[in-house]
Image (tube, rainbow, N blue to C red; front, side, top):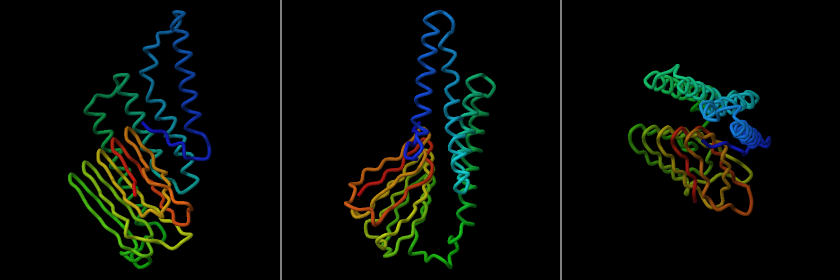
Length: 233
């Protein structure tokens, strides 16, 4: 699990600090015979629930992204499993329903966002890729790149933007979704990259060499569940 500390509010560090304090208190009480520390490890999904609710509260201020819902529901499912209230098959169905709901919500949101109409953005200005049980390779040579989306489920997406460009002083957003799969994004050396994605048992990794200025910026958003998103140049 990866806690995104990119937000200006130190939410991730606050939750991590509280978690460490609770574990320390539990160990101290165990040493005095007042508490059996093994019981607390059954409650670890509460961390996911707290993070999910925090992300949800923050995201509702900026358009209601669904990642907070997903993380909260996954935490609830794991907590029920730890207490024997949910079997593996039921938990798997619960997980698939949650992930499927996120995919549907993201697709619906993208189709209804202002500017998502084909008439308002030329196809050459966007990069959209979807991989299911396989691999997809996409190359963009757009002179005015506006962003796009990349989704990989049990597969991989290779997004090559090294021949694309954008006007100075502008930014583009690439929305990603990796579910037990991987997405690799290659960008020009004069682009700066900002990752805002959330990972659950996965990760977002920025391997780019930062340029001297941020006149051209690519923002990577989205969700990685048991998968990864890697950006390099």
